[in-house]
Length: 495
Image (tube, one colour):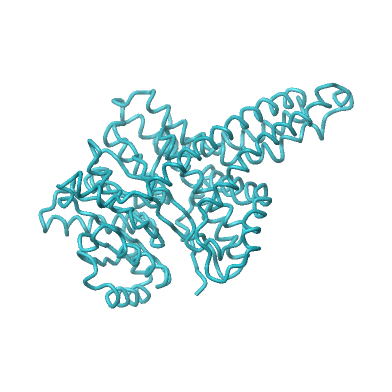
């Protein structure tokens, strides 16, 4: 009979076992049964070409919705269609650690310039006691520049060393949420009327975002049973960043656009909004894990017995790439950021553990949500390696008799044709990257646009070293019980 600890550890090991098992099995079959592996690679590549076409279709569907959404005057529609919008209370949570003033200033400037009245916006900024001197300095600057600009500016200092939490964004937000609960209680506010937006501190909102959010919240038949996920664009400092960082930034934005259009596996990611009532009933953002942004969705989904969803918002928010002062540090930051995101595999054992406690949720719903979460991490780690490396292995190690077969001679040609067809995905990425490219800084030369196109030649390198490997690193840590803490993504801009 397994103890609770042993059972949970088994669940934690499962994602790593499935990923490493797949890679090892493919390598083994390449040597042991190369013919079978050649057939498998061809079938898998056909499947992946179809997935690429599927992805490209939904990417452009989402882009069209995005282009339409940013052209709408959402505040005008809000006040015309929902006169009771004034009863909603918008609160923005900005957890920070050691960010520069320039980053925070641009975030607050964007909130101030929003079409939604800043005098109806509550801004909660939560710093860390372990960086108290820096935090005190920032509070003075924020007061100096923004006092009286919003309905209220609320400052909290997250103490270090609180029980049952790890240092990081999740514990910072959790503390701020419960401090703000006391603030709301003192004013007699209805939690269901409070819309909270939990942003990374570098999140620059589109001028229409808050109005669009409030409109969608008012329009939703049960807004307390939904999170609201915007398009995330990593383009605040895109022109200043190295090519690899730009490719990965575009890739993340494309993945979010694709997910918003599909809906069937949409989970909150990074900056998101939701009802304060739902956040509190689900226990607040998790304070003892790294991936609190996605976990809060699963917490709500379980709290409401599978009756919880994510509503897409096609008005974007913009964030920074993990650019640093030199190339190598920027690449290191990128690797650590990708590994932290891949650490979201910790949601898989969480779900497996919680399913036993929620018999009221159908097994079909459980299977679907678990499959999407698990398959996403499996594809993240395995597919780039399978397509770029292992896919050719059976051809390299095949015995002499196999080398004389028609299958051996035709497989390279078939794979070449399939990979050529898969270029539709690359072409879609290139086109989309130019469509969502932010305006360049003054003085930008025309040749830099050419570099924005040429950078996509680095895609295979980025997929292996800054996508598959960080994910393998994360699931291996989880497999071995070597838990990762919260790695703060360093984000710097050229002054």
